[in-house]
Image (cartoon, rainbow, N blue to C red; front, side, top):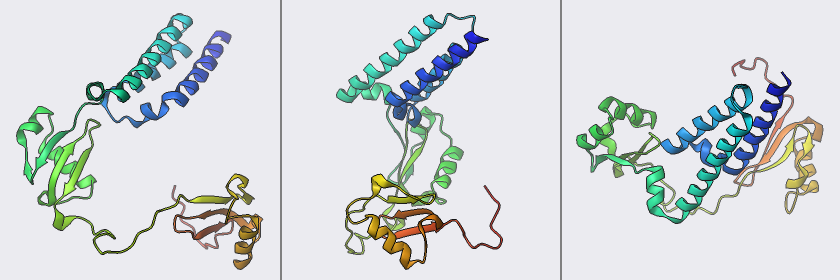
Length: 231
């Protein structure tokens, strides 16, 4: 029993360390290569932790070797477009100039039902609205609508648009997040805003300054007579 516990603990720690290094690449599942790697990592960790019939050190050596190889390929891919093409693949055009490319769809075994489903999932219910559609290596469909069906932007309306700022969280569960208190949003500013709302610090569950510079405050007491009980 102790051997299983020790193997599990070491495997878990190793998984955490690996995730810190390459977790963003694995979790994205943006191509078949990353998807296959994530499954292989899960298989390795499971066997290292629970399969006592396999030598732990041999398994760990194989696991570490695979991760090192993956990391080296990441470095090589960042410097070579050709290697990136091998690893990540290329998108397949399935609609061009509003025309469905049946030959390309047959090559990737992508049916018209698949196409319509992914268009609907992307908010497109009429195929005649589409100018271009590309099936990415991740299996997702990227769509460019025809101009009459594209959403209007501020630029189209000649409206000025400044740069957006990241939201700044100031209070969480009645406590000020000290590392975010700086510049304009100092302790005095926070207390002033709370007084405007007749609130004490302990009344606040969550407070954040949004990208528009406005303060959103949520209190512990939501004053809802019958809140929805839906997770």
